[in-house]
Image (cartoon, rainbow, N blue to C red):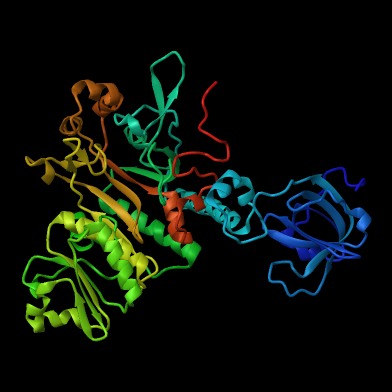
Amino acid sequence: MKNLKKSYQNLNFNKVYDFLDKKVFLYGFVHHIISLKNVIFLTLRYENYLIQATIKDKNLFSKEISLESVVLVHGILTKKPSKKDYQFSDLEIVTDDICLLSKAKQLPILINSNDKIHEELELKYRYLYLRRKEINEIMLFRSKFIFEVRKFFVQNGFFEHETPLISVPTLNGANDFLISCDLNSDKYFALPQSPQTWKQLLMFSGFTKYFQIAKCFRNEDSRSDRQIEFSQLDIEIAFTSEKEIVNLINKFLKFIFKKFLNYSNFKIESLTFKKALFLYGSDKPDLRYDFKIIDFFPYLNQKAIGFLIDIEINSKQFAKIKEEVHKFFQNDYFFLYFENQKVVTNYQNFFNLDQKKAAFLFKVKSPLAIFILNNNQDTRNILGLFRQTLIKNLNFLKKVPYAFVWIKKWPMFYYNKLEKTYCCFHHPFTKTKLEKNILKSKSEAYDIVINGYEIGGGSLRNNDVKLQKEIFKILGISDAEIDYYFGYFMEAMNYGCPPHGGIALGIERLLMVILNESSIKNVILFPKTSKKDCLLTDSPLKIK
């Protein structure tokens, strides 16, 4: 150990077999220790490579060396028989010297294990959890993914521009993270919820094709596909059209899925916002599963909508479904279930129905019909949420592993009954043609949905300063507030504003789909909890 004091060239794993029967140096973490009577076997980990160091002289080994300690070994690289399935399991370093570089104390979580870890430990000791092979490979994949994203857009004529992270607060400042430059001042900057106005200002500045992997910050509750800090692929194009942007993103998605998944069975569908809500009760439907909200009127002779479940289910699954549907509709739902060649139902009128019409409900083995005696959009929206629950609890066959759909022709506004004000479905900079009935105004907006995740959203932008002011007014923003929060933007629109449009795609959500991860935390190096805490640093902190 005394001889290994200076830095040495580490073993090159890309050409490892070139060093057979030669003396090598290897730095690494101690992944595993086996101590026998006359020999000690150390499995060392460098990046995600594992290699065995065999120590025949026990005097070389210090009892201070523990799991995850960092060591440097020197010896001859040789081949050995192996039945293990990891790369380079057929190699060992017959060690003649070893140096402990950094001792690890007792571990709060195991690295050389696939056992599930409690999320609190996973986040608090994130630097240890990231040593695990599975999560480590996800983060390396993310790095390669970002590289290919940049390469694609550069090759397609785009320029990457960085927009400010110290930005202007928004009107709905409750979702802003504020930054004070002077503790004695009541003025604040804010971290950007998105680079929306900045990228539009770039178009005003004469740039025509912009992209950026942008950091965004939204002070809102986290969930499985949302964090307070996230990355988005931000794109803006001058003198463009919806068709150009949609074709660009289609080309990008085909490239990414072919590159990383070798997936080329592409069918990118398109639905209007209205039709998506009508058929699926959702503006981000998961089209991998081919069942829709259907109208039961032809069979029940009264207004009713719901689902016909065309798969075999057992009584246990049926009980679970009843439990779930009760959460959404309490007792205001009806079911028809075929069990042991008998109809089980809480719909008393069933036996008075025209049996020829009702027979359609039982055209397949063990069907289940669930319906609500209503046919309004609010009911469809709730059925849309219930559809997601059915997908999770039943073994529906997937039509395809990846289902892509554009949601287009959005309304510009909706009415918030609680706040008693109009709001935008996307944002106030979206291009629109205002109608006398505000709620009938359409926007030139579009979302891309994959497997039920809203991966991206965009629109053509308004480039008429008078119309922009009208939109603000409809949203209840006063002249004083327009000037205070958006004065810089409105002023810029007065000096020649090109027609332009863009889109932003969530990097983490796209990675979740590609890697089949159920939580956004699994594709972020240092995520926060659902309560917006960083357990690793025990922040946020009170400033002393």
